[in-house]
Image (tube, rainbow, N blue to C red; front, top):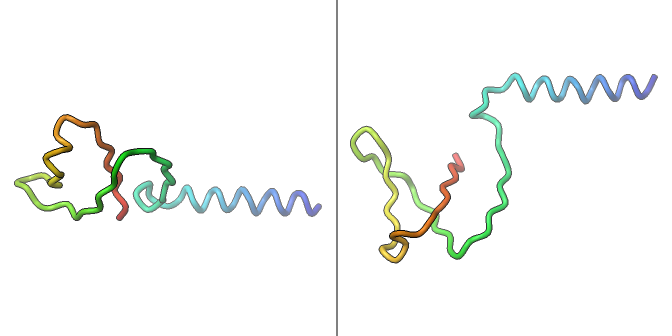
Length: 67
């Protein structure tokens, strides 16, 4: 009986996590790279913009939204 209770609790935890909108859940990323810069995105017309160092032009970057 303990196994059934534990299994039911685990399944209810999964369901409650699935009830949250996708943007409310956090994901963990493990990224390897050369440098990291943390900046705030600024308004640019109907979009957002992040300025990066000129040395980064032509390089590949990955952007992760943390908020």
